[in-house]
Image (cartoon, rainbow, N blue to C red):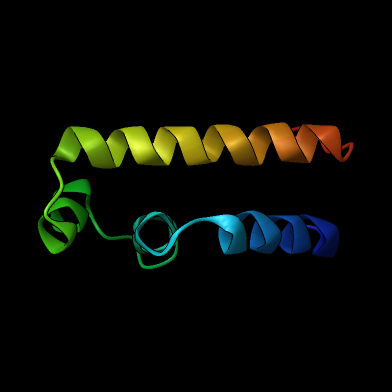
Length: 70
């Protein structure tokens, strides 16, 4: 990952509310399972999956806007 991509990722994560940020980091930084994250936050597994999907979509759109292609 290029440094610019890291900066963009950090900007997107910093814009998220606390629970969304924690869900994203738990999944992709700490590699927690969907079930572990759901239990930790009192969410359903479906809600966690939805939150992750929307966040990844925002990140992809922002990276594309900045000229990065996946």
